[in-house]
Amino acid sequence: MNAQKLSKRLEAVASFVPTGAVVADIGSDHAYLPCYLIHHEIINKAVAGEVVKGPYESAVRQVKSEGLDKQISVRLADGLKAIEEQDKVDTITIAGMGGPLIVSILEKDPQALKHVTRLILQPNIHAKTIRQWALKNGWAILDEVILEEDGKIYEILVLQKGVMTLTEAEILLGKFLIAERSKVFIEKWSREIENWKRVLASIQDAEQTSEIVAKRGELLHLIGLVEEVLNNENR
Image (cartoon, rainbow, N blue to C red; front, side, top):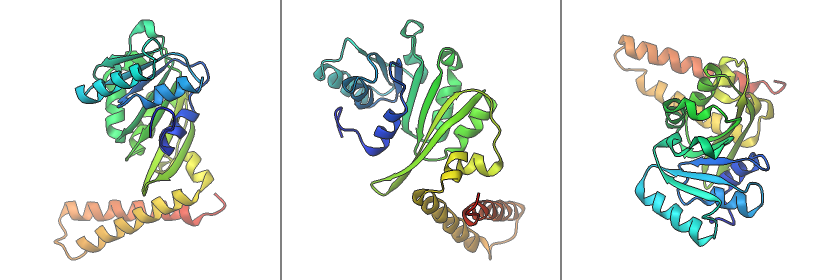
């Protein structure tokens, strides 16, 4: 992967960036995504934010080597603190972190979202937490993608300001992903059911404390919820 050729998941993230957007890529690592977006004339201005010194320095070197230091501002900052009012950022990308970490970044500096109209978020795990955050904070899901790369399954959520309603199943699995029922989606949740059933089997003979009983109930509920979606082909 480099600034000319992104990974499959980052290419998918890039596909949702509106033409002419001002992007802040948070946790930018080598700044490949903003460099790619400018090289492909999708955008002409971006902020690359990094909280860790090593990746920040890598991003600075990358942007300079690509000749894009006048168009991309690389900043060493914690989360959305990389964004300044005068940047006029309208699109934020955050990729390659867990869902809870992404949510904590969004919650820590909510004022940075004041002028933002699109969030493109790629959690490695626990996409559910992002959907829960969106419901509570006035964001609606515009689109969702699930894909597999190098044996790992990733979800991408595209949010815009608005109101939405989601069922319990849609919060867990994704409304758009349920509707599409792709091969990768079925594979991911079939694996999850197998994992839950293994945990159930492992606690079957354990002392039935209140915690064990509660865990068993939770797992049975999740298995039922997901199996209903997977078995309902007309959904």
